[in-house]
Image (cartoon, rainbow, N blue to C red):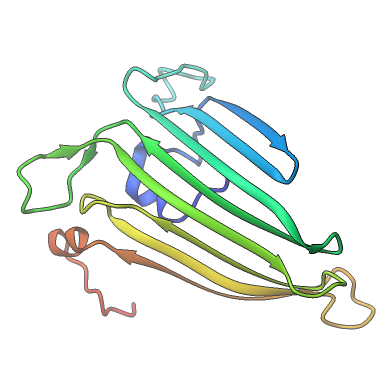
Length: 189
């Protein structure tokens, strides 16, 4: 599973990707062109002094569960495509960003995502991608993330390892985050 840019700010310290990862269990099952993946991770990392080797499970406090369904197919074997849809849930408590809500913390945090990778040319040199992540609820810092673009392999003759990439991405902040923080939405700095 890749980590979306909208996951880290919404889950904060509870989902550590660097420098402290968390233990987990991962399963993967394939049936024809469909792949189902699921994982359960400890929901919060411990201090380095308390858990030197990062092997202590902390599911009593919180857990992070993610599942994904992938379809691999396309027009032909030489023109592959991949379509993914997934959902994730963190059971920990998070600061409520909604200044109009009297609850100081909220739980759980839930999100959805989709990813499309599609090869356009039969020689597999040109492909496009799109992905999106959505976090419902006003308590999240980032509500929507999306990205799209294309990639061309071997754009120049006799340069097989070169790749030309062009992409666009955007992360939108929630109204609660904008109203509760000193953030200028139009700022370019």
